[in-house]
Length: 357
Image 1 (tube, one colour):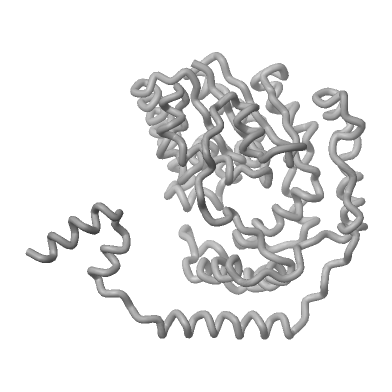
Image 2: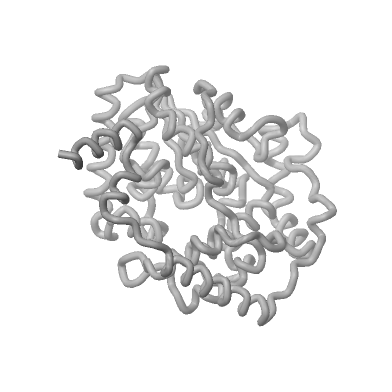
């Protein structure tokens, strides 16, 4: 049995990849591929929590209901759960995916993951996607703010040490073997990231699930407004999640889009210059046929971002008020209607017959 370990990096279509694998988990199992269940919602974040330094997962552990001192027991239960699923399925391959493997694990964490997976198989391949650092940081910044982050992009870039791809690949190569790394670029040159992922991981290409756009990025003004709100509505309240804030984030995600979130040209140049030498080293090792590791920055990325004004804040307050008022005046469904609407067509018929007796 072999293991394919997909480690991200963040903002390289990981949410879509994980949704695809989770949706087709039963079909994949028929092909001898196990995408383990119960290790996160669609992804395997719980595995990252189990092996990471607890200080690196303080924002993830509340979602899993794991306190800092509970991580060792949590890890033991989790890997036993994986072993049980393997014994039952007897797969040819186990597919494990979490972008937090690349962003949250230091050398020791990668070593712990290697040891845990080594108990399951001695045939492990690591699959990683790389995205040009400026594009990755712009997308990451939107997610950072939605998660409750406070700070500018320079602060975030200093925290996101995984953007140093040379060091990242050295870390994983040292633990698993450089010849066990499959390195891909995002976005793929042709086709979708799902097409590329299926080819790289050697899993069958099946129809993509129909769903709303996942991990919706915020526009420039919504991101800047939410950044300011984060100082008043923190993402966490004590050891738990601040539920009052979640509704605002969901509202901003579905609010009609404004100007795209962009990074000023000078900021892009400074960021890319930090990684120029390392990117060239990665190119020479993994992509010797390319002239550069990543494509050049498009000219339209030099457009300066719009300034946030008091009118933007007033527009947001007005839109939230209208949205809340519409929600408050919407007719409430009866209990029977709410139950029936959640059932499948066949189950609805059975529910109707039950009510008639």
